[in-house]
Amino acid sequence: MAQLLVRNLDDGVKERLRRLAERHGRSLEQEVREILTGAAAQLRDATEPGIGTRITSLFAGRGLDTEFPELRGQPVRPAEFDP
Image (cartoon, rainbow, N blue to C red; front, side):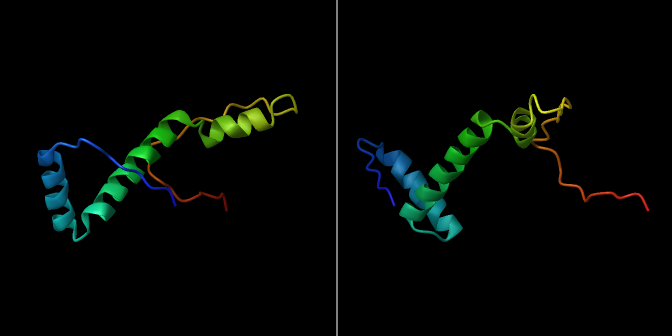
């Protein structure tokens, strides 16, 4: 696991993070880890191509000319099958 040292953090920021961690029942370190992990996940989601784009590029030039729409932010729905 990697480690990160943050220097020159404003005392007020540290205190607000400490109070937030306390509300969530976590240590300050764990709270900061959760915040950073969430922020990094949002960046990854915003920059990586979605599954539709990846499928389309995987089969490009192989007879699959269908575009697959991106469904980010859509609610999950169960599959519907015709009887």
